[in-house]
Image 1 (tube, rainbow, N blue to C red):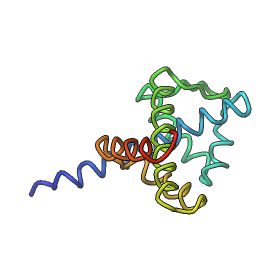
Image 2: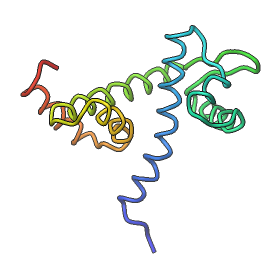
Image 3: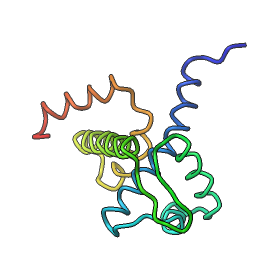
Length: 136
């Protein structure tokens, strides 16, 4: 029996979600500290370095990051683009939630989950709403 399209899309979104979270965090670390290391990623995500290592290997295969043993991690141009797009989606969702009265802390937490699953059409509707109701 074929899987309904919504579940196929959801599985793809979950796969992409981890990549987006990692490239965003690597970008943040590079901006904050000038380097991004496995141990710091593990600490920030609350997972083991083994878990981070497996994800980093996958991200290298997807040409999102450049990693060498015992060195800092760097984003490829493709990884930088993904991090920037993901961060922008997060900002739009966060601002939208705040514009409809969601408290700051809740908006920040909820935006982190929604940003990975929001469709382009819904994101566009959020942007349209924000243009009408704010200076974004």
